[in-house]
Image 1 (cartoon, rainbow, N blue to C red):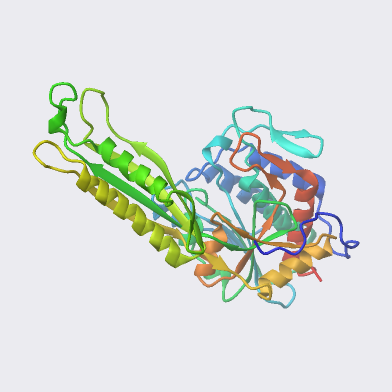
Image 2: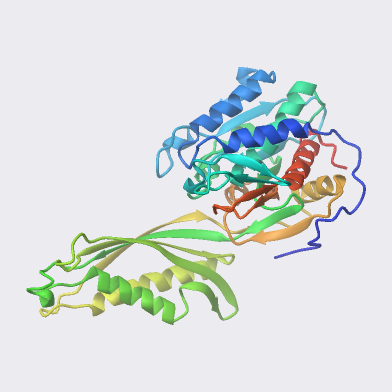
Length: 408
């Protein structure tokens, strides 16, 4: 992590700038968090955003949906939603981004206020502040500009799909509306003063383990157990330090075997397992080393588990790069501009590097340097998820300053 100050204390008095309607913003985020919309099922969220924009005066010609959902691994209901507003003042085009989808645990959210926090009144669901708070922050900025006719540079707002399942919306987004080299700001998790300037790279693997079926009671010796192959491989990865939190010769990464599926009954030696795993590292070469260790462990285990005839199993490994790692300079224009907006509302920016993926990973890879700002989310992906209301309010102020170029 690259960090300046970790305090959320007010550093200086907030500078003059447009103030958002925070009562409306709070109502907006609660409405958004109550809409079901896990990855691939964002149509209701997109429809809500579109209605809000049209009521505020956005012309239909300024609102556009791409076809990214037709090319994602799991086809979705809708593509990325975008709003383009020509500038009323001169300046570099700016892009404000958030993702519409939530993780499945947030379906069923019933947002309720508890003091200075919002939580779900449904004990079985998360709140969905990740990332409906980001959607609300960026949408509120657009609505303020439309309703109040605030001066602004050229703007593009992007509400992306399928972030939680691999950043697919950002990877496949039609970015022609963004133009060349916009100042890009992604609103996602954490406190409002947090500026994420880098993130790890992630690679997902599907490992198909093939064995030989036989009767588990009458002739187990004729079988080759896919379960035994998988168990041996995972145990070897764990014992040799290539599973979990990985440190090797000064390099760092992580890996996880997340799911194992196969077999139906106990009286048959299992002949097939499907395993899903992931590896991550900020160092692309070390990430590829972890991938290789995974493949070697499974292939070696397949050769070692044999039946009485000497037959062994086999392994097929498929993988894809979900997102590449990145690190922005503190002097990158988007980073300096975001830091100025944070200071303008009386906070001191905290520059951080994430160990998870962000839509910014793919935006940076596609030539758009993007800094990620928090919106007050806490305990994301958990039933204890909460939204800090004062931090959310600061994020609304920051977003409006960025959208109107009044951060300095």
